[in-house]
Length: 351
Picture 1 (cartoon, rainbow, N blue to C red):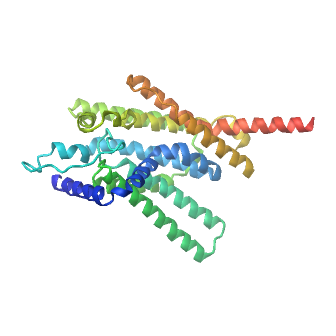
Picture 2 (cartoon, rainbow, N blue to C red):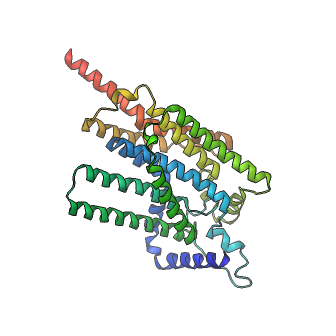
Picture 3 (cartoon, one colour):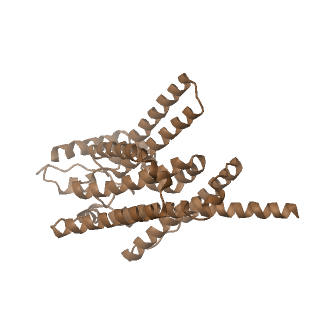
């Protein structure tokens, strides 16, 4: 593995040297590829454009990130920014100098890449949804083929930039982003075939949320009992990150787990709310556009709410609650409020 890691470090140095002027692009790519974008930006839009696609986005994102967590615990992959300091591969020679950036110091294991896995799965869902819409609209064959080629090419370009950004930032080795990309496509393909996710009951949401949480915690405890320290990466991040403020609690494994479980539970609560049935058949374009715009605005306000990580328990609980509430905003709170406002306006006009 050391030889493979050394090749990855050489590629990272090559990117940092030759493409240093694209640092802003790579930073943006890594930020946008985070699943936070899916929950706070993409989901509200797709939920009102095509409800099933919005639901599928959340399921693919949550299951994919949950599986990514388990795979990271099993594979225990290194990260370039600490590996170069601890490896014996270079022996007496000088270790390569890797630059670090504000988003370099991830605290979890490196394999597979969660960003590559997430962007592959999310873009797979969006591309297949757009192609499905084109087929339903009976798009001419030639135009459909051009659209198909263009969308898949665009996805390939986006994934390539994200993968390059993760290597550029010294957060991942090349083989880790490739593994993440392949796994993300597989997860998205499998989940997309499960039709029951579109009409899952609240009990199913609860059972699956509890199962995934208990399984992950149980797996963690089992490995800990047999002597595997799954939090070894946090110590390495704290030791080798050049700036302590670049280490964030929200990149730890359990923060990711509870954030995803909160999102899944929030989706279930929103879709199974008794108020949801009153407006889910509303096809008014103006109403949907209003819901999208207001939801995005409120979600950005919610996103600005941060809390201290000094107390880990309260941090995890608040992360869970914030993620659940983020899904309730577009699924139930905003449309319910708009319906009330519209009904009130109609009453005033009749008077």
